[in-house]
Image 1 (cartoon, rainbow, N blue to C red):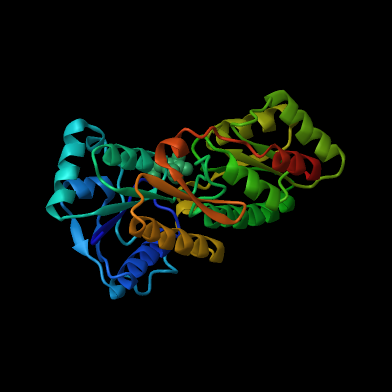
Image 2 (cartoon, rainbow, N blue to C red):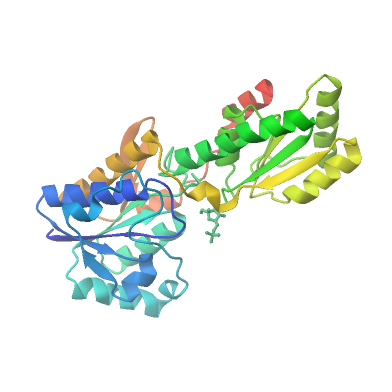
Length: 318
Ligand code: F6P
């Protein structure tokens, strides 16, 4: 193993830079050459390859986004696109590729490994929707961003004695809503894993008001969506004023938390170690605080487990 390349792909996540830094510095410590591929698989197909040095990753551990930029590429999914990508990797004599991203990016890595490229995946997505790992890079920071918003909405919700709905990202996964909702003391958490009944929700909101609650915070996951319509419905049915706030891409930015920086550093270090050990088609994760790695096919086929207990606690404490 002489030359490693690293790319970030799909939605950016806070902590991706810390992961790039860990990959680059570990690779250099182990006397590998290290290349950065800009703009994900799209950049790879265009040959956007740059050499990386220790200084290339100076002053980035605290920065959100990704210095390598990112993209979502439909063209890469075609046979022609993948062939071009393999051609570029061969041209630059890349012996191993590290992909930092979510499930779409991992599918890309899986395809490349079938075409003979040694690949390692590092999970980087705010959604925390990769079943084989307890946590992904960016999830902790995004959840804290949502928590900050919930705290602020609680102030204004109490002042106006209103219902506040906060709509959060996560694609089809309710983890951001569940964690931030529990930590923020939300009265209701609506996530795709559990669904909800509109009538039941309105009844809860009304009962809470009659029991003396001055605010009512509802965290609504993107996988269910429709915050504005839900606010109108609640207001119409209960007579209590309701407002919806969609946090959007704010959740993707910002300086990574300590937890995300440590996770990214551990993942990045391990990714290079795996390539050094001659392993390929592996993805890295964390299970019960231990760093793990497993075959990429196995990882992508792992059925998602929902944390019922956490939901039960959130319900009990609301
Ligand atoms: O996967 C991260 C994520 O932010 C999801 O939560 C969301 O559904 C999606 O990306 C938004 O994608 P885009 O950046 O293309 O708007």
